[in-house]
Image (tube, rainbow, N blue to C red; front, side):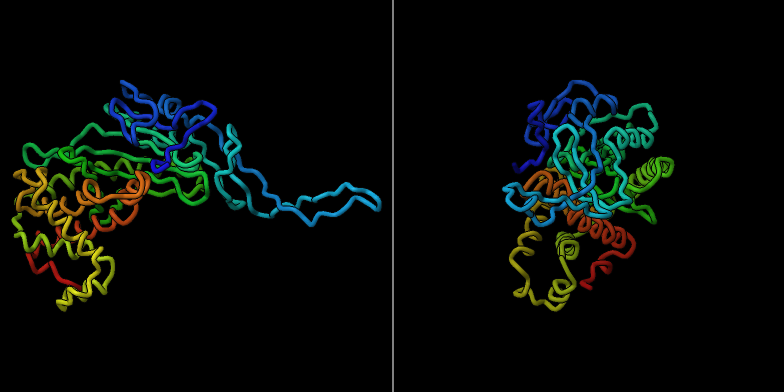
Length: 355
């Protein structure tokens, strides 16, 4: 299945819930009001327990004795390694080490409750599980908006994901989403990362302390972004400069930048040039790029890169898109574009150097 949303054969339901609007191929439970985190767990089918169990292998089979047809295959315990098992379905979710601490879904969501602090206006919008249930996530919308100009409003979200396969941390992140085109604008400002990652060995007290830190980060980032984006919406940039910014932001390595600097365009891959052309076409042609805040502005140039990954590029699955935007290639390219725009606002076209 391309969507990779967990399907529970016992309940005959997909492990996903969304408020009012369909998402993830229309799967899961669509509810008509915003739930509490506890209700979100139930609606999304995430109320299962994960157990950490010993791992075993087998010794060579041998007969019980002379003249016996019975054989025995002795079990050998694998030291210092364990399987994480979903108790309701008995599915193995991953292999972990001795120090790995299982964080149950309810614990993770309680952690998320600590982030939002039960604040007025916090709205849980989606929750779900991927694969066999080894990755779970929840998103909550904050009550405040980032306002760019008069009509361009950006919603602010907190997002939490945790894994049960030993391959990831508990990750909580702040991410704004531009309403007019559902465009995720991941950006780090100053020394903020906009996210925290907590290993599964951390104590509950430490987790909660870091959770409250993220809420402070989101408030600070939201205010800074509003001021910066409004500044960018007033900075003019030419079409040629937009294309150059896109070329730099989308460059996968230094070799591509060197070829651009030396004018060796024939050495650029077709894949790369298609990405640049499509992002540039989006920058100049998409209707969301024709607003006063985006048409011919630095804010529009930034949206050209982030919007390409959100609204133009094809991904092999929703999960691949989700990972790319939240913590993968799309996020990296968006951060590069952010840095370029920040420098362009101070230096003009001199900031766009192929290096």
